[in-house]
Length: 112
Length: 114
Image: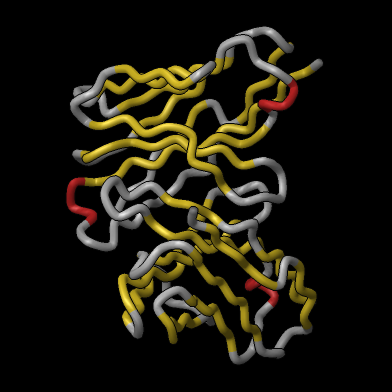
């Protein structure tokens, strides 16, 4: 069966520091992969999606970037964090036929 | 892609009562999905209804879809305290392409009181 892992689960970083959140999927090949951000008490904002290695689409211009160095690995990065980057980051992979999403457990980022 | 809008934003009921949440969207869809999120956790897919379906059941969940009104509802029957969570709808537009990206609204926060 397919599983999705995100790490770290919790992260506290100072403003201006770099960021790297990782997401890996097991049990499927060539998945569509997604990064979402959720502010406290809010809905999910789609940040990036990828349909294949090296193929990244950005939904919202911002301080973040994403990369897909391997088929089942999706990385969210920043060179210099802002206070506004705080939030709950969720990685997901997509079922190919119906588009249903399977989410990881999330990474909570606090920028101080 | 476009998001669904859930209504109400918050709902508080007693255990054993039914909970109904509504979703509205704007464009033509291929299907509409409902997800659940427990506090501090990832979203979990609950149920998917296709555009040519009007009603679907899964355990205590009943979903309806009215494509003429561009709306859907999620009914949870005989609610339990463990149903306390945020519920999101996600319409999948026909035009979503190979990426099949979904967007989500702010959700309905359901609280079931014991």
